[in-house]
Image 1: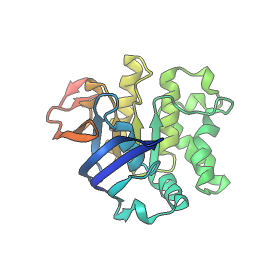
Image 2 (image 1 turned 180 degrees about the vertical axis):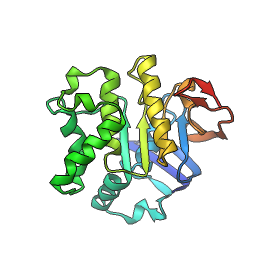
Image 3 (image 1 turned 135 degrees about the horizontal axis):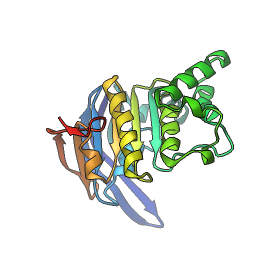
Image 4 (image 1 turned 90 degrees about the horizontal axis):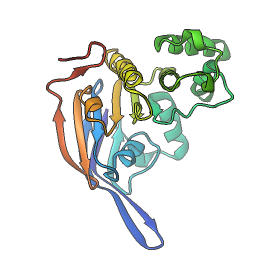
Length: 236
């Protein structure tokens, strides 16, 4: 699904050059659940933005499903991103004056889904995260955990094969965080590829593979041998 070779990212500001990624190499297959870890400034978010077509590398090769990012215009990247990728962020990014149902509908509007199908697809996504009783609520009427579940429903409403989650439990209490990880593990079991950025070791152990970054380079890339199960609190 993902192919990255010698991917670098530099930011230039008034002659000063900051290296965010110093040449990373990895592959990601369909159906994997991968955690990207590393200290602050290690390049985690930069790498996720490049993988999710939110940014471009300064050099190197990055391909998604055999399509190189360098071959696509910004409009083409946006179309691929809308149909193939879902995003969940630490700060939820919900529209505050918009109901749960209408927040989840947004990607469908951008994708040109017929209006008669929008509500059905949005309701199904909301039901899948257990919030069917909150359809007409506004974000400020929900707990943090519920808001993040709405964000997940919005991310999966188009049935994208790939889901990015950037610190999805960072603003949540431990119980709500556990519920979010349970949903992500369930989505992975259903066939979605999950790429999770986190600084929490406990959360990272719920993935199947951990890529650890330091100073813009991959320090380690390892399979999780004893994976935590968010649903049962067990290690398997």
